[in-house]
Length: 442
Length: 65
Image: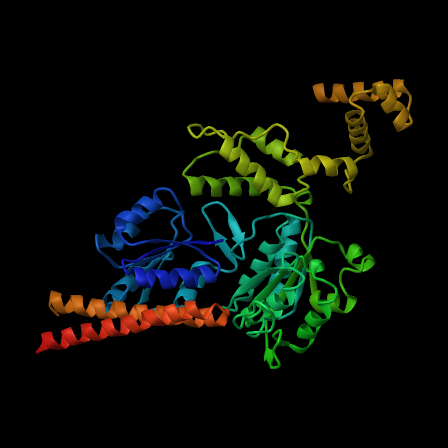
């Protein structure tokens, strides 16, 4: 979530802007003086700073001076009420400094944030975030970027498929950023709603529609009008609600629960699921007619293990983010990067982030080395490894070695039983184990 | 413009800024179907800012005389 620092001595103004920016998906911190601002910036970094020109203890220009020559400086938007100062600012503004004239409007804020977050590429000093949020330079990710670029020029609904933790919500954000609608991306998890309330959450309700409906409520389709609606875990939607969703997608109109009037809704629907195409076809979790409306443009996001090179890039970028947020300077050694690359990350980017975050917390704050665990596998990974270790392209020797390893692990090292279970002689088993040991020694 | 006049103009402009932002917030709250109390709170702040802005303008006109 982008972080914004709002610096203005007018608390009523700050309150209104904070609420608006939070509704637009930003994490907002406020400060009323330069002194407060300096104390906050000593421990946190921000993507954007909105800065009043005149503060009780000095000018906002002093803050800009502190970032002079810093390649990681945030985007700064100066807010002034003086047209004359605005003209002066226009001459001083560089690529990372913007200005706005009071009184502000929502469009001003939007335009400043849009200008400051370039939708095609956002560069930090080292890491390129495609569409403002995606990291990765592997061929598989560049294929995804091309698909995002193409579909963003249309209004087609998109279905995102991929394992848990690959970044489906990030890709949804990227599609929304690339579409440049200037409207909201509204996210909803179909698995999180109770069966009784899912209709109300999606389509809204009128006052009195049911017990507890004390006021009219706009559903997520109405909230996302003109923008994008992200429906995560679409296959968790109860089958009896799916016809209602289908009708909305077909007609572009929604009727609130308990209402009679049809309302026009116009948004791109981006849905997501962990299931594969095969699962969708064979199971009955999603109606076929609904699938064709949702998956006009399906995108399958690759798992981390098939993105060579991205594990190093993501690890360094995630660590860089943690360092920036916490004022540390941890680095990953070549040996640690090799360890990270050797693991297959069944939990994908989420698991990688979790591992690095945990290591960050455990590391000595006075040192520079990250305390990475020797065994990266999570409890879920160990369970999955036992049941599914085949990856296309693995050599037969590697598969054999892994099979022998998991069998011995299961039998707590009992070689005779392992040999019997594997259908080979004990001598053959010992020969294999000696061969693996020799190759490790070399 | 002398310092006192400049201060009054600055204050008036700040009140207009509050009016603008609280009104935008009220619109956003309505679009999102937020509880009416939140919208009313924002609009009450608009009314207060209007009164304060009016006082600043009155002070400016008295200074000019």
